[in-house]
Length: 399
Image (cartoon, rainbow, N blue to C red; front, top):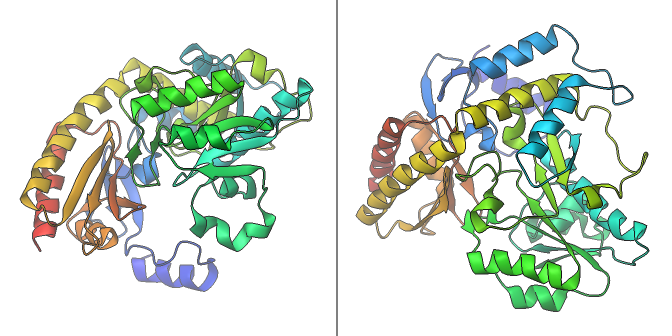
């Protein structure tokens, strides 16, 4: 089918939850290059919103998916699953965690983490049920995670359905967090870098202060690494950049290399709060998703892709800063860590229009809150790929 045929079907039958889509349908990809239905090539700097960390058609991931699909895709969690057990072991061995639960998405992972935190205190006989999160955050679109997402535009239509025990406080304000905590507070859930919120990088004093405050008040710290994790920010998990250890961590997006999977990781004492029946998932941790994720994690580790993201990201950031200096009226800031980068644009330079013009020039990019051009390329990106994007961005800003 050509693009017009696909668009006609979509507009007739698909719920309009994504607004006006960009005028392209991708057919296949290789490495960091995507090809549309007309055969045109694009260099990908968005990775399906940080999902395709190994790019497209990576041999290890493709092999794992094909081999597992040829065996069995799903059996249910009533039975033991070899790839699931291996993935849980690999994740625990390379993180602070002792136990893992696997679901299907980041929102599910965050909701599971919130349930686990509250259940932990329930088991201890403590009446703690409040979750504190940051304004401008993004944790998902289920009812609980919309409440956790500190953005009114997502919360307003569902305000009467949202749990009042989930409250948002300003990001970066430790005093506000302390003031919001009550004897009923169970946990703080935080992104150390707010990706959807505009690529807002948490200050070290603040992130470390949150950890210390949780220790002082006996709260659990949940770190949402759905977008920042899996090597994206120059370490396997972004919280490592701050020298802190959470009690619970959530993963998704890049974990499956394009196959849907989410994870809740926790210390043993916390994880023990979940008993049979407290949580579950029909599809979560199925053999296909776990085989893909196992290949992704093994590749990230064996090729030290977090270090590559750190090096390539520094190179790209420097080039973007050079472009910004040429257009001081258009670019307010270049920020981020590793290969999670944001270019904050002046209000009269619409980030969405920049994305559309870059797409015309053969580059896939995205936006974030606050009129930010967001870059999330595959971690296999080479430094040579960065120059072409920056030249194109220079041209677009000049226009």
